[in-house]
Image 1 (cartoon, rainbow, N blue to C red):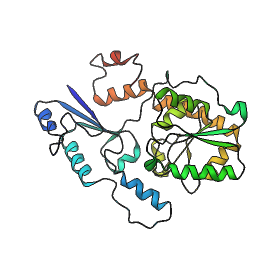
Image 2: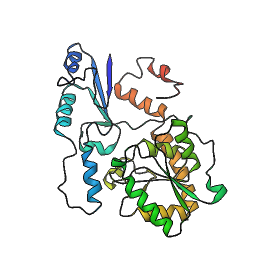
Image 3: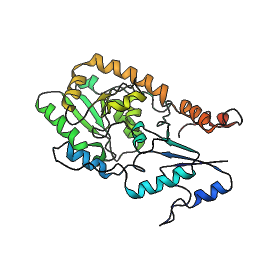
Amino acid sequence: MFFIFSWGVSLWSWWRFHLLDLPILKLFGKKIVVHFRGLDVVDIKYFDYLREKNRGVELEKPPLSRPDQQKKLKKWLRYANLVLVSEPDLFEVVPQAKLSPQVIDLTYWSVTRKPLSEQDGIIRIVHAPSSRRKKGTDFIEASVKRLQEKGLPIELVLAEKLPHHKIKELYETSDIGIDQVLYGWHGKVSVELMALGKPVICNINPMYRKYRPDLPIVHGDPNNLDQAIEQLVMDVNLRTKLGKESHTYVALYHDVEVVANELLQLYGFEKTTNVQQSVEGAAMW
């Protein structure tokens, strides 16, 4: 029997006794899988450092993980049979892990609306600041404002504090997406936008490109964000090209059926059980 955990949280997570169930599960011969997603092993304060560094403030680089995160990670590594990460940047913290990326249901993330720019000529740039602190939203707002003052027909659309279907609507009716501009890899927002055929701007560290050399995301950080946005705004053919490549990319790496098959192989039981049949037709994960 497998016990599969996400975000570094086990069945028992209380006060000082985090992960107490792991040795018990191991004692009874259970297999343990843990999937790290980001802030479970990376300290949010690291993003504060990146933000201030991009403002020109001289600071000492902090460790990626807090001591308490490292303590829990060591226990997971002691007991887990399989360790997964959803982003290649997390190999910096968990080099022993295997990559299992964010999943998406392409039957839901399909195009049903056209961009509003076809009606009024205003290029809409959508950004979903689930965490302004982490995503560098202030840099994005400043960049768009500078380009507006320069005369570009653009508008920043913030998709936040909205129900899921409303966020999808904003994505669809926009022309360009911006995920985050501080860290070094994309999140699920980029995957959703790419599934809808939108060109995406995000901070992508060149050292992680080797894991996905065909990633069609345009690199954008606080130093080049103006240029990255302007290039896409002015070149409709480039937007169309990247949009098509983006949808193909998501179907190849992030489709729920593709990732499910990969996970079954990692678990080692895809040919010995009927798990594949039981997940077929699942609407949402």
